Image (cartoon, rainbow, N blue to C red):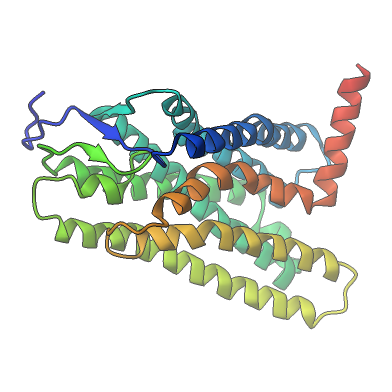
Length: 308
């Protein structure tokens, strides 16, 4: 297949997570267990929030969208990874590779912006409580939701456009278990220094700025809460501490991968495994386990259906 940008590679060979058969079997079992247990948990969170009239606050609206984003995100890498573990030759077409890369950054960028929106929601709720119902009304929530989807799309389409302009004429071995920017760019048959700088500016700088902004906003919130004596102090601290845990778990690996020159490090694959497969499945569960209202509503939902 000849492309206008002189690309002659029609497929990429994925070298996978490891060449050890024992290690592959262990990872396969662990990922499968995570997938079969925690993925339905994401959908249970969505159904619980949608079906309970008491969970209509913006916090739960965004939590439901977070579960949807993570459930969707987990479909991008994990299923193909499980199939590849059972395949002798791990091959992905050029088109499928670009598609996987697009949705990876589209949903990942959307989730990153969603965490920013959730931090904004908590800031208004705790620091400007009298204005909360006015600022975070239903129309504003849907506008913020649309903005984060558009932001994720804009972030992702820039990555794809830059890669589509690169020629690929061989070799075609990707040293990873999925298609991502750092590994794909290194296979281009041209000098990629400028493209790498643009990619780092797009993904790395954006991720770092969001991370620092989130830390600053939660620091302000925690200082404000600690200085108060209200009844909801412990609940607010618990909610913010949960958000901070998620911020570190998500942005830590992303900063490690995207804020440096695209050179291979021994820890890259392990960090990528956590960032793309394990964390998206665990993310809403961490929120739910620390949220008493959602847990109580989930119990009522399960008991009602078990009785029926």
